[in-house]
Image (cartoon, rainbow, N blue to C red; front, side, top):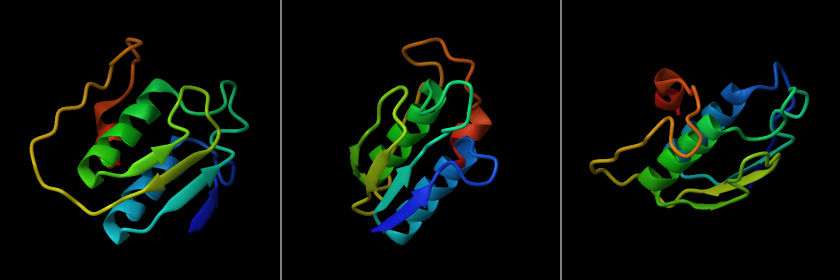
Length: 105
């Protein structure tokens, strides 16, 4: 299983979105640690959870650590399953999450 340190580089949500996309495309499980660790509000924020849930739904992934504030996430995709999917970027908290950032995942 690939382990990625999410505090590397700029340490933001981009490493999460990129890791999820590549894990989905390759069908390879990934563990992200230290997610957004040096940010004022470390860990997953609502918009990051929306991206995780979106890619998890499309890949029927097994996911652990998908909670607000979580700094670790395990993502195990099972394949890519076509279909119609709807994801609410502002779900739960009224987040100002970006649709384009969610679409990157």
